[in-house]
Image 1 (tube, rainbow, N blue to C red):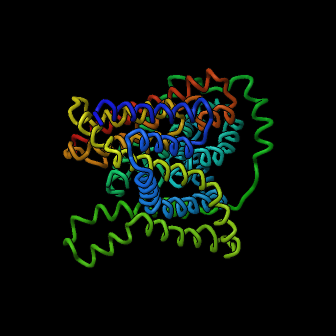
Image 2: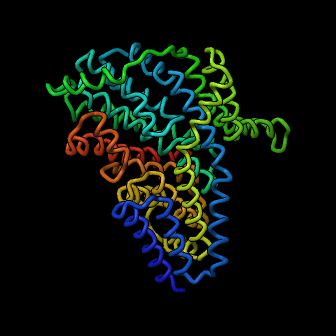
Image 3: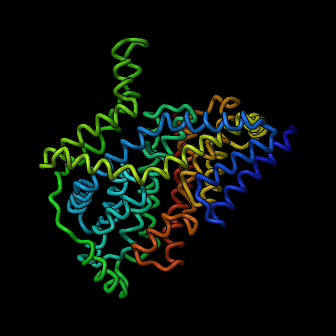
Length: 447
């Protein structure tokens, strides 16, 4: 098969994903499955080879990720139902004051968003924004956009979020370095695209129509809950990150092959780090506060049903990537892109950005992009896989608009018109995407 034919089949498969998801409203799992079949059949793979590539792609991807996603979900549920996330939010708001409320909400989103999905984090914390807006007279936009933007940044570039963790494994990156680089890039990005963005684009004072909107919302969402302390909630959230980053930072200080280094690598493995964090969380947010093991079992069981769709999409993404490799398209793509004068970091960012704009799913965009970037890495070994992971995540942050469920969550919960949501929230994610790219490029020159 000629290089031109291979690239045409790749283009057709990507177009198929876009059309099935955005126009025909087909589930991303089925869209990725259809695209994988198109690649396999179009490139002349035998039926046996197609099935083998699909099974291998799903198995290798979920073999690494399934346990991590499940444990991360438990940690997020513990923080949600214990009131730990809200405790962090209220404490930061009290300490930073009304004047810095937008900065406080950005920090809340960045910290509380580490173990939870975007929609869960936003819905979990929006009642706090309603209460603060009602008490202070601040505009919901002024408070809500920094929260939403920081949640989106963390969602795309910081493990243990599923897509960030998935592409870390696909590109063979060190997860500790990805977390460290993600924090370096993500925090200033959230600052610029959150509180600084709303400072110049929206009014601090609430519009007249906000009072009636809040009157209905706050009555329905307020509830009292005995929450854990700020310190214990923060420790529970940060423990897995400390263990994973600690492994990376400790490597230079121990001899290769030593037993000490093996144990450090074991404890810093994402699966083990999250498992230890769950044990700590069961005590700190559960047993310590009077919950029984039966209560914790019930909480844990409630975590898993929502994960089915996420796992299927990620598994199908892994199959699509493996199909590209098995069909030979990956090598053709590597040859073409390897000769391109475009910086691979910018290329990875651009592909992810365009995919997110088209399909409306940051997860699908990131996993699909990783499959296209992976073949290039062999030809351009001077580029760090960890930096490419961050670049892909940075691209997926942007263009969160009408094709993305996150857009509608923010629009409805903040009571925005379509034009307001596009101007303020979509604009913030686009700014965040470009800002993260610039920080990623700068970081790549320093490491």
